[in-house]
Length: 298
Ligand SMILES: [Zn+2]
Image 1 (tube, rainbow, N blue to C red):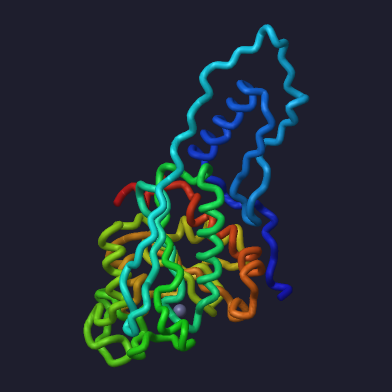
Image 2: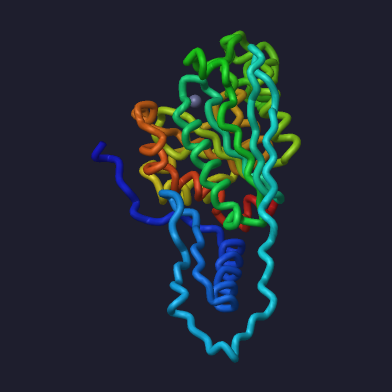
């Protein structure tokens, strides 16, 4: 694994919301003179951002000025629901955090490529633990398991043997037993499609194995580059596959669509090891500025 390098760089951090949250914490420290431990989202989890012993802030008792303490904005909303059901009736979970333009992050559309599910679940844990730092100008929609029947059976396709990532209504779609006789013939693909129609995501990240690169469809080069800068994968354009989700969302809908292709050894890694290597890229998908031309032109 000598090719795996640690970029040694912290992930991009949400700017306006984070700055505001830090400012609020600063105000609380100065106004109340209390010990405040704040947290910030980092690649490895939670770390203290402000840690000021009360003894270092002293004020004469007679000059104590305590204006009204700023009220922090409410935590972002969290909604957990079921986007649909698999062929065998298993739920396809969806977690939405925050409000505003949606960033859709998904894993395990191919049931035998489930390492990405660990990363999406780790991302969810981290975001939920640090809600006060969650960017207020966007929402994140997490779908950790798109193909639950395939994950259970360790198969690429769903219980019908259909490759869900070839079942989308893209121009290059091919009807077949393996890709589905019609577009969206499979309930899992339909659930993903309906989620995209409902939330109109401004960017999409989907996790696969084992082609070890950051691939993109549509106007996704900028985000792909930012994600590659903080993980051991290089940007590589693989080209669109017939009826793939990337062909549909990236090429037809012009949504920046990133395919994070983990390497073959990903399936043997623990969740901790996966997060150590790719967590920063996952956070970059959330925190990368929204003002790229690809997103504002939509
Ligand atoms: Zn795949």
